[in-house]
Image (cartoon, rainbow over all chains, first blue to last red):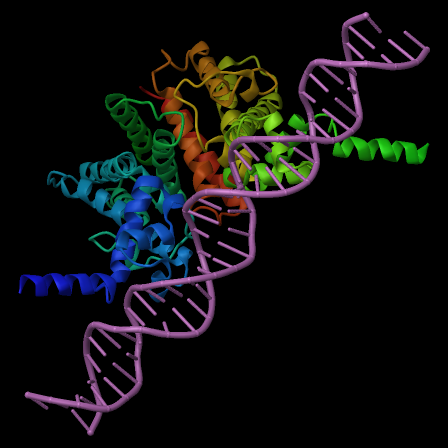
Length: 218
Length: 218
DNA sequence: TGTACATCAGTGAACGCGCGTTCACTGATGTAC
DNA sequence: TGTACATCAGTGAACGCGCGTTCACTGATGTAC
């Protein structure tokens, strides 16, 4: 019995993996997590899945197809991180306060994800989408919105609260640029050495700046 | 005579290159310009210099040494672009106006360089310096200041003009994050598709935001 | 001014590496009868 | 319930590629006499 089970397990590990597509994707995500998009390799992914290199071609058309799947997963993880920050917002019936807090939550989730998962963050933005991008569910978090859409939803609250007259074209670009730039400079750039406390301070100042820019005189 | 000259030229091209270090660096810069840091390769650089691959080791200890030289050159080119924007500022004796215009010039030079030379821009920030970084002259422009120092100088003018009480720690990080983020999103990210006009509009809005954040109530 | 020689910049050949991708195959699984 | 068979997921071997880097070499250049 025991040996039978072992035999079965051994068989499964050689032939008929079970869910190789998923196993390869998981391995590839780990590779991206540790080493960024460069580290996503068919050979290493198959190695980790305990399978011969060309077995991957049953499930992915090419190395690039696998990488794109990882990118979608990374964007989805970013969306989940942002949603996590939004979810912990205290309830309030002041729509202006909610709007401001939502925007800060989006920015905080964004930068914190970049700090905690720099490899995935880099992968998410490595071979990027077109402007509008495909709003496919693979890139979305639990709410079904991708990171850009989550930012847009936060800005909508500004309009709803009367803090913004109209959704200025490019309002999201301002917010996004500021937050994305900070994230990039922290993980890849000259702000790498910043301590956690200083990082939080800079982030707060940055969010102040964005908030003032959005709700101030325009 | 003519043939003599040809013979001499031919000799020089086989043995004794002349200034192979410089030729390799120039070739490598072209590679980075066209394909980013990934494209900087000893073999291709030597190929372009008309020389055998290992000849590079007379002048650079490794592929990485060459890449670092390219990075310094890319940062210097960025500094020159910023200096170009600063140089075309109209003369004024209003220090506040000068301060604001200087900051905008720095931001404009930064983003325009990223748009015009995306490969060099990506290379400049690919394997980045420590926080303070070595302020070595290789990375500087004509004024002897590197990009970060040029930004700092612009902020100093804010203090001098009385627009900023103190040089807030992290004030440069706000400005830098905003500008760097926009540059990144335009060349690598979801804002790639933006037309030149829209790009300028977003940049102006972004610079407004930064300016207000710096000179506004702190 | 002419010759002997040391220097050292570039040559030529080769190494080992990991990669993506292709081919013909094999044998476990699930289905049709 | 049992058997024949088609499917197709994974195997095994191999390819060509470009890369960084090493070695022993060679011969043009500039210097010392």
